[in-house]
Image 1 (cartoon, rainbow, N blue to C red):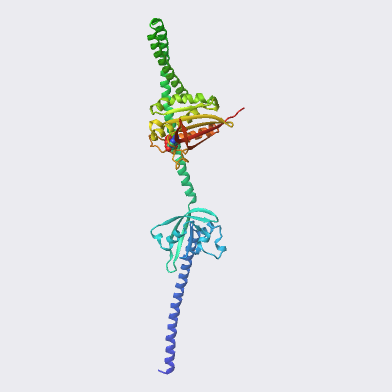
Image 2 (cartoon, helix red, strand yellow; image 1 turned 90 degrees about the vertical axis):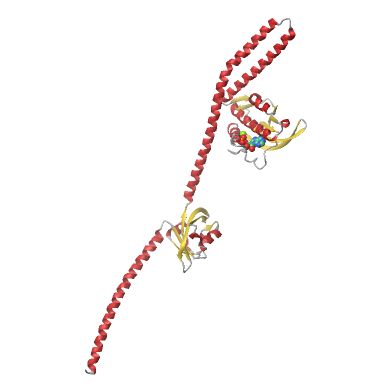
Length: 418
Ligand SMILES: Nc1ncnc2c1ncn2[C@@H]1O[C@H](COP(=O)(O)OP(=O)(O)O)[C@@H](O)[C@H]1O
Ligand SMILES: [Mg+2]
């Protein structure tokens, strides 16, 4: 073969090889193009997912600087993010417990504690957020945060809780009122049944007295003794029948009418209600009353004063020996206001709790003896029905030359003189 022939042969071989390479390159190129399309598609998918998510996404680095954010995150910030070059997270979101927040992220605590509930302040407004974190790019120490504003759910939960608490309180009050109504009704029946027999008894005794006078005309000593006893029996019956009447008036009358009433009569009624109970517990009720007239509902004021007496009684039984148990009721008129003082010698109310005693359900007694409603109701009645005021303080004072200390409740009621 000649040299020339050999050359042509080589050339042809090279050419075929080149063709093969070219074809291979073309195939590879095609594949690359397809892959590029795929990558673009994936990127678009990711971008659209990231950007259009209803959750706010923020990518941060380990110094808590914002690297990336989605539309929702920007929306939460009123579109202020893109305007600034400063990307310090806490410039936009003021985190209440920042150290804890930072530690939770940078120490990868989110791997154990799935989310954090945080108070974030944005443009001076603080909302509760639920924050999730995850690793975003481990080689560059980036984290992905998702922020969910849960303030409205939180508010809703709070108001539901409040509502159910209110309902519970209303139920308690209803039960209390129902109990009181039942007791009232029962007493009303008793009072009604006792009325006639008491009348009969007093008539019988009166006629016995007249009989006696005719029989014992000679033995006047015997006569006067029996007469005296009969007189005492009569006064006991009158006392019983007064008590029954007063109970009746207080519990049965659905009287919500307001009218002028005499304060002395009102307090004397209260004395008959409580007389036995106070006597049994060696408590002296000392009255110092001025002749005053109040406009309003007498039953309601009676209820207030009964509550105060009952509290004083409880405190005296708890704190005082039988020699120093006094309750004082004093009334007076000062500057166009009626003042009613109810004080006791039980030592007073602990200064730590004295501000709370008018609160609903505040009680220091066990559930059999206290409801914590008495003073709350008293305050409501005095303020709303009598447009007055009730307050309490501890005071030291003298009675019969002896020093005492106790709670003093002061009720002031304005007088409307026209
Ligand atoms: N005269 C008083 N002396 C001492 N503590 C009193 C007196 N009156 C009221 N308190 C305190 O105030 C609390 C609230 O009273 P109250 O509203 O009547 O509820 P309750 O009598 O059912 O406890 C009582 O539990 C008691 O601790
Ligand atoms: Mg009470």
